[in-house]
Length: 156
Image 1: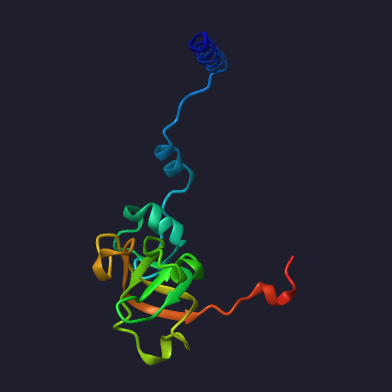
Image 2 (image 1 turned 90 degrees about the horizontal axis):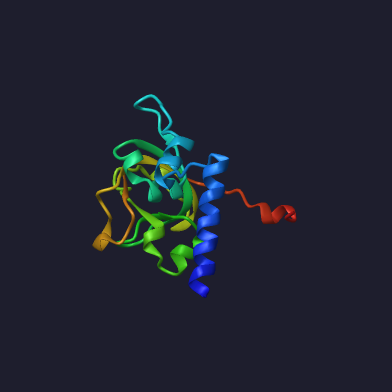
């Protein structure tokens, strides 16, 4: 009896979809149609979120990007994460490895960890120390502290 009720619901849904003109769409195709990759000058970095880099790495492969997130500069762990908690709990897949070897002393964080804005070239094939991260930002040319803290304003 239960199979007949489930079958009835499925048939009713299909009939409704056909009569109202609903069309099935692939999630991947729909997502690509919603937001195409921005077009910029070759030297100008693309403003992108870490979520976009992690979810669609091929879109930004070998492009100059500008991202913001929680940066940690530590032995075998230079990386930018979605949140401070991702770093605290070692959620490496929520982070992107940073190659900061070419930075001068003037473009570094004042501390070893904090929210920052980073510019460099994204490489989805490189995954940092022990291949733990979701890609790499190489040739980092900017690493500046992001000192905005809305909690100091009393919040909403």
